[in-house]
Amino acid sequence: MRYIIAFLAVCGIVVSALALQVHYSNAVEPCDINSHWDCGIVNHSRYSMIAHIPVAAIGIAGYVALALFAFFRRRNITLAAAVIGLGFALYLSNIEAHVLEVWCLYCVCSQVIIALITLFSIVWMFLGRRKQTA
Image (tube, rainbow, N blue to C red; front, side):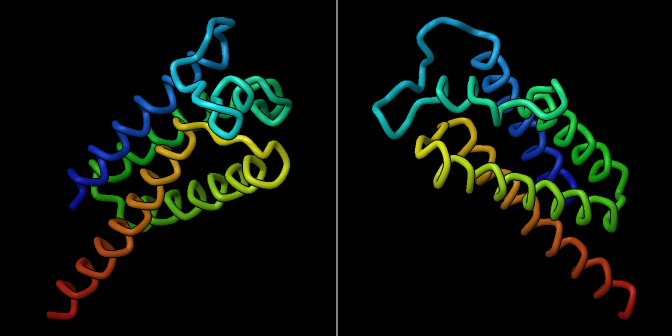
């Protein structure tokens, strides 16, 4: 299970790196699809930075931490970090949906990845406790 979580975290690093590239780019973004799907609008909005740090960079750091926690079998910390990451991603998705009214394809992919990591972390925790009682 830890390898699945670590693999998903690496996927999250890649997606977050692509979003970070859009954040620093002035070119036409590859996911400028229509008026409802535009990574450029999302990644250049005032919500794309927290304390002068791009949200995508925070995502990269979070996914690196998740990969390391999973790889080193830190079930409790992996689950806690995944829940925090999911909460943060849901907060950002709420901003996309209700404030910006524009979605970023990379952000949605990241949302799916962190949701899967959270789900697998819960399963991993359950399986670990089950083995301890057996």
